[in-house]
Image (cartoon, rainbow, N blue to C red; front, side, top):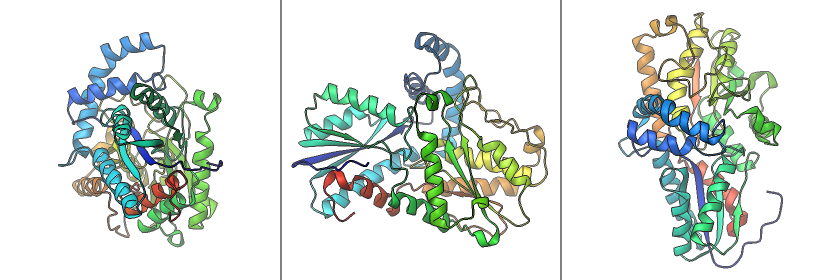
Length: 395
């Protein structure tokens, strides 16, 4: 943020917030999570009374079952990958501030599900904090993400009768430490422009009506991509931007979409070149990366690269996808997925859950770059973003 932050005396309470996750990979738990998530005024695509009726009579029954099946493929022995990552980040930040002798309490919270924003604010108040700093874990701000967190924080503050200052960090899309961390993650994944590798930045899409209403998300995704490409010293022809995870088909969404972009890049690929896909607006890997990348996006690219016919002209709406092939690839794609490819995808999914980079074979044409997750680099990013608010001169 451009304004100068002057920390006030006393203990600072930090909330790192994200969307949330079901409590379990079951239809019942997913239904409960989706009913809360999809009724958010910033998410629902039509007047609330009509949407409530449609959601509870038609959508939730199908979506809960389909989503539960997906969540089961990414679930870990310790629980939801997102929950595990945020618990680690909460502990990591708390240890970081304790080592520096700073009076800071840290809580991870979710807009939907648990731990809730209400719970986090109450705990920080009970811990004696006299200042609240909220960091939505979305590097690029959007009405549907950061603004939703702001709504939840406002409700939590009222209910807790919080009387102290509250600072809200809207975005950190061009923070130098964040940019260097994303660039380093691409390098560490094995990216090499010298051998003809290309880089695709894939961001979550948003409705165009939000942009028309003043949402600057598109500008921030462009700024992040340009900054990372500059840090990597890339030629403009070696990288591009796309958007994934459209919510519904009833509205126009920010494009170009990732699926048709993958087909286009595959058809234009040079022999032995590799495509690296990175998702800089996801702080930690979640369903949109842990499931969608290995099970939907990578197969599309590989099929198109092999010359197979792939129908991926548009991004499917998540609400209309009830567990069948989201990309509407024809049966030819599924029929030609051999055992070796399936094994490779399962191995990749396992590595994504651990937040680790796998060793990339030279002949692999598609490489996913994991999110920063619970890495030391991510903790450095968060410490740098929060530094002005907690008086941390060393970050």
